[in-house]
Image 1 (cartoon, one colour):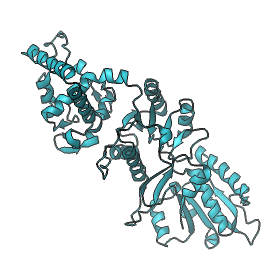
Image 2: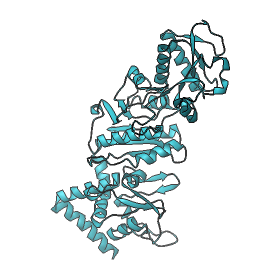
Image 3: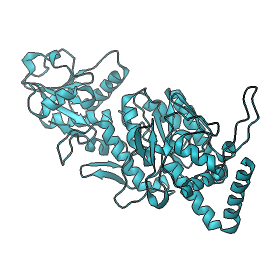
Image 4: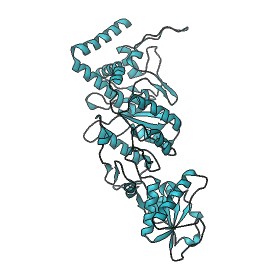
Length: 451
């Protein structure tokens, strides 16, 4: 009976391929849409259940997220993800020392495992594997795509690919939230498709570059979207310098390094510092004190950058605890470590202006500052407008980055675009936008100062 099923399945593909080529193309395209985007016939988002009770749909349950662009699977968190190319699923494996030979999948048993999680060996798949709500023609189309995926990948090396790069689940809470949001980008208003992301998950920065370089060696018609880079921006930029691959919306706390091919970056700490200094000088603050953290390399680097900027703009930099060099001059204090109101000299409360990049301040103190409850006069710098115009709610960084990335994916859609033809401005809300390849001055102009 099993052989009859296999012969029937092969005959079906033969008829599709040789009698109606257009039908074969349509089936493969539908299968690819299900596999890469979780989008089925007529543009509907596929529904699925995981852990027997959690309902997900669309990109959140797209096969590509775990099984990869080539369907070969691999390690995913604590689950070993199998190779689901049809050549592998339909293969008859020899019997082991104990037990019978592994039964191959045919059209019927594949439908069963996709819908119920019951394998040909009458075992249940791990509950993390979604149980899909797919119609018969959608399952047949998915089989057609899995049957042709090797040929498609080998003959379609110029296909435009979007790679994501995030830490493995559980390593960073922000990255986990970002991953979830990217898998659940909202549908566009006009119903156009959302481009798929082939997400790479890494243990360490070194592991990230090994995986990324392997994928880039397979297809150079690629860009990297929202790589999670805090703390290793320059390491990433150096490794990518010779690849000529664009990096879009890097999740970074620093400005794009020199000669990096970063597109739509948010203003980094360097731009935020410059904007704070310009704002202070405009208010008549001509002397600058810097609080840094000697044990923190980032803090020390930023302190050097701030001193150079202050001198260039005619501000006098004074020692950490020194008195004023000119009694009539007002002092601004730049915080390049965690802001601590208890560290401030009580005699200077009415005299000094506190300059703080938002990353160095407690969120509760940010709210106090916005409500006028703080004793110290503070300017807080953000890489974007921190409060939504329509409701006044505070925006979390991970939400802003994810919304920008979803907007980018909606612009790309299913098109094989050239990164050089991306729009000059990416705007996703009335007051949120990014420049394509901004200069340092443009990045600084985007910084928002909360006074």
